[in-house]
Amino acid sequence: MTKLTRLIKGKLSVKISLMAVSAMAVLLIASLVVMLLYSRKKVKEETLARVTQTLDATVQNIDNILLSVEQTAGNVYYSLAPHINNPEALELYRRKLIDSNPYVSDCTIAFGDSSLTESKWSVKPVQEGHEPLICFSLPVHNQAGKPVGTIGVDVSIGLLSRIVAQAKPSENSFCVLLDSLGNFIVHPDAEELMQQSAIEISKANADAGLSEAVQAMMSGETDYRAFRLWDNIFYVFFKPFSRSSVRGRTIGHLGWSAGIIYPERDIFGDYNNLRYYVLAISIVGLLLMYLLSHAVIKSRLKPLLMLTAQAQHIAEGNFSEPIPNSRHIDEVGRLQDNFQLMQRSLTTQIEELENLKNTLYSRCEGLRQAYDHAKKADRMKTSFLHNMTNQMMEPADAIERNVQQLCSQSDRNTAQLVSDIQKKGKTITELLKNLISMSDDEMRKEARS
Image (cartoon, helix red, strand yellow):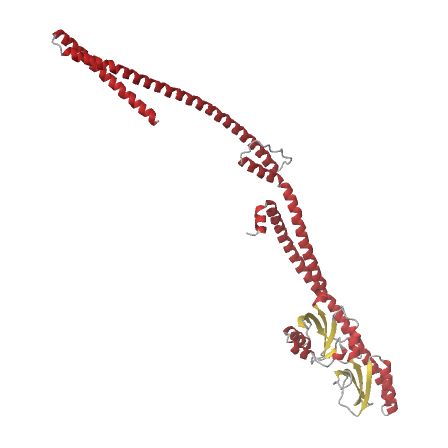
């Protein structure tokens, strides 16, 4: 048994304090678990609502950029129609389109290719030494309404990513935009754009959550997923890239998906800190509660400690040591009062037993003295009988001898008289022998006792 176990088992105040703190700890833990679970749920709901707003704003921001490019290309298209056969005018309008829109990095006006029949956005293949681009292609029609050429407007994905990254919702979060093939259109690191697709990243990390998130985004779902990347846990909230309905806009769904990726610490960082703070405060609170309850309980148990010590003194034979009066009216106070009455009653009974013992001792002493006197008188009686019989034996023997001498004479009367004397002498002799025998028996009994 360890010292701590002996201390707990040997101290009533420690036991009661630990029981009180244990009961409070159970209630506190249950309350904290409910509170933390509810808080985590509310944090997730609040984060989801905030992310939904941010995601909508991000999609709207990207769509506004695309819409501005579309409108700029449309304005040039209507101005370009009368000058289809003028190469100098085409170059002039091309430069004008580039200069009029800050998001446009390059523009191409080509004639002779009539394969493009409607406007569309597409991701251009990456050329070595050039940044990745997305291209808005607009068909050019002649007066008969047949497509005779195209206007291609290039937008830098890196520029688009930098513009979107400026509006990130938290310190470490970032926005991504994927096309239907899993390629990045918007990425926080512009230098990494088009270097590696989302599918390749998910395969390289071999994380099921990341693969599910990429597939869900490519499928056009609206949801969120948790995944592990770079030894950290992330949450991605995604939705399809929906375009605003504007008059004259003919391009439909692009098949893109927008998402905002949060590190777990950005979502639950404050919650985790709160959890640690609450845990530390709870531990300190329970410790303070234990110390306070132990001090109070120990103070309230002082009368019991005093009664325990007093009971030990009484067990050692100290019955007369007084017990102080109690200042409490509770159970402990009543116990002290009853113990005081018991001690007084016990003291009284001990005094009565002591008096009775003294009385019995004095009476026993008198009986012993009387017994000694009786034994002494009995010894004197026995000695007297013994001496008397010894003294009577000699005259009786003399009478016997004299009678025998008389019997030897021939006188008849004398013989008769001697015969009578002889009979009586024998009787006296027998009696003396019996007395001597009885005297010897008494003396042997006294010697054995």
